[in-house]
Amino acid sequence: MAPIKGFGIDLSANPGFRKVFFSARCQCGTAAVLSVEVAEDKTMDQVEEVLPSLVERLTGQAQTFYSMSCESHERMRLGPALRR
Image (cartoon, rainbow, N blue to C red; front, side, top):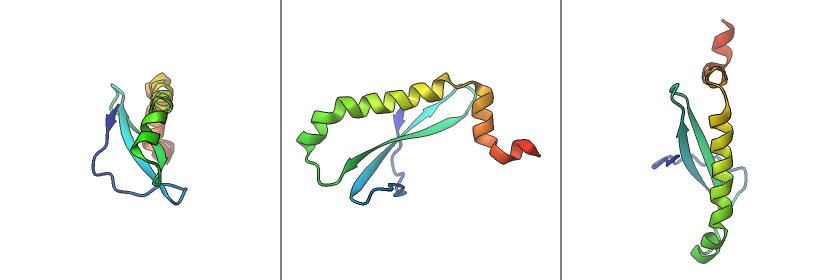
């Protein structure tokens, strides 16, 4: 996993939260965008306190992605184009 810098799209469904994005890439070339949200009003101490659970959540997202077959990745990547 690697942080995505400059990904300024605000995709949070929760107002007042910041979403931090990471990427995970498979050997087949498919990349996944992973994310966690943190409330904007949290202090750095509060964020550091829950950091292990944030990392666990990201790790779980990455493991789900990596456990998928490359065929599944291709279906995700190409979507409706596969039906043509």
